[in-house]
Structure formats: structure tokens, C-alpha cells
Image (cartoon, rainbow, N blue to C red; front, side):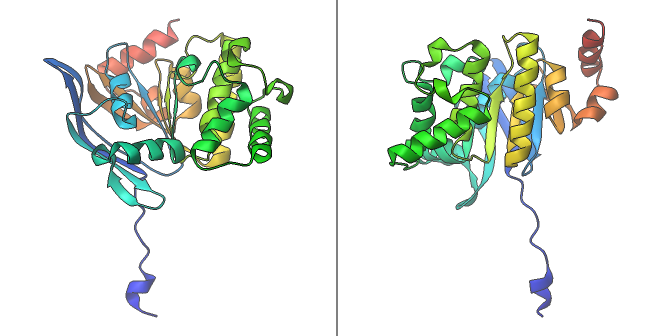
Length: 266
């Protein structure tokens, strides 16, 4: 056999971020951010309010336009491409198929005037599904997967509790089988018991589907449970990163030590 044929193809990061920068006039949103996200990996981003974590997530997901840097995504059919250079139609298709975004407030990610089944079905129709029976069946299946009674398929999200709305938003996002999901404070504003159920659900779905994920949160318990790796941000910069347990159990930067100790003192 040819020696070249025996050489394995080096694994490519699913997402390669290089020197990402975003500012608002003289104020830095995030700067000099670089990291690799590998297939099936969950990255947590933590920091206090104003640290730049939400700005970074918005730049990565394309909700904000970065001023400089690269966000190279290894697409299913396209291979590695800098998503910052995509046309608007290309970006919309990426967000419908291979990417998903879970908002902190589920109302920002749902059509409140459309039924629960319709919310899930819309995502399927956006990628070409047209058979009503198949769409409704898939929507019903996904409601069950996120622990919503299928009998409520025709109810509107406004009739649901906050935790149920968040689970519906997750179903709407995951029904098309994305590879990468962005989550902005997915448990924010929920009661502790509801948070725990939602975290268990998210952890199961991420592992079951082999998803890669980037999670922004102020809650260290969330990243402890969900994230493989952790980045700590302060004043728009990444000041520490590594394996989640390593960073939380043995923080090296004084700011990270303060974050961890403040949780322990509560």
C-alpha cells in the first residue's frame, strides 16, 4: 500500500477562533480571543457581568459583526470556512441546519403566537420538510424528548411555564440535528429545581447527539456539570482556560480564584 495512503488525516477543529476582536468605540467588547472547539466538545465561558462573554458569543454566532479575527467552521459539505466572510443567505442556511442558538429568555427564540408543534415544525420546514403528517409526528416526538406532553402540541408557548418554554426552545433548535449549539445563560431566571431538570436534559441531549456546544453562564455549577473545557473572561480578555475541573479545582489567576471562592462562600 502507498505510504501516503496509510497516513491518517489530521483531525480538524469544528470551530477555530483566531484573534477575535470587537469594540464599541473606545470600549472593548472582547479582544485577542483564540481557541479551538473540537467535535463533541462542550466549552463553557464564565465571567462577571461586563466581562465580554456575551459579546464573544454573539460574535461567534454572527449576531454581532466582529471587527477583526477569524471564526473558521468545518462545515459538513463545505469544509473549513471563515464564517465571518459568509454572505447573508449562507449564514442563514448555516443557522438553520448546522448551528443552533438557545437564548436566555425563551421568548426571544420562540414564535409566541404559534403552537408548540408549529414552533418545532417551522424549523423543519426551513430545511425543506413539506409532509404535514411527518412534520407533526417529528414535532410530537421532540416534545416528548424534552419532557413536554405531546397532548400539548397545539398549545401556544404563552400557556407554558418558563421551564417548559426553555425546553420547547431546545426542541425547536435541535430538531434539525445541528452540530454546534450556542447557549446564552440557558438556566438563567429559572427556579433551582427547574434548573436541575433542564441541566440533566441538556447533558443527556448533548451526549446522545454528539453535539459541540459553547455555553455562556455566570453559574459555575452549570459549567461544572456540562462543560469539558472552560474559559474565564475579564474585561473582554480570556485570562484563564483549561479543563473545567482543573480550572475550578486549581484556579491559577487571581480573578478565577475570586470567582470560585465567592461561590464557595455562598
